[in-house]
Image (cartoon, rainbow, N blue to C red; front, side, top):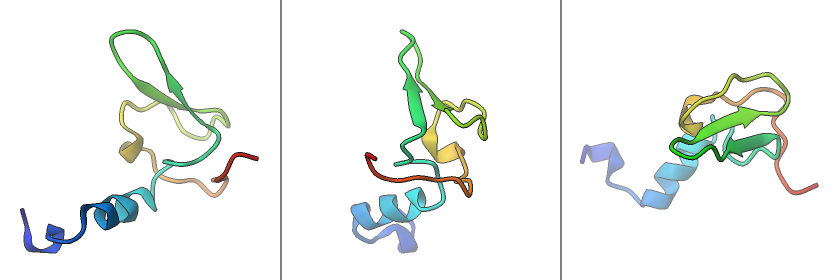
Length: 65
């Protein structure tokens, strides 16, 4: 583990998610058997296999409502 990564793992994950679509209510997961894919309902992002590859857009909406 590199020196900057020797912190609380939860803090590291939260910092990485601050710039991604993780948590956006318009982000859906495709449940096709054999692979996973994340899709943006707004059409802003193309489908990605990892949510960390999706850069957060200015239309990010958090929460359930």
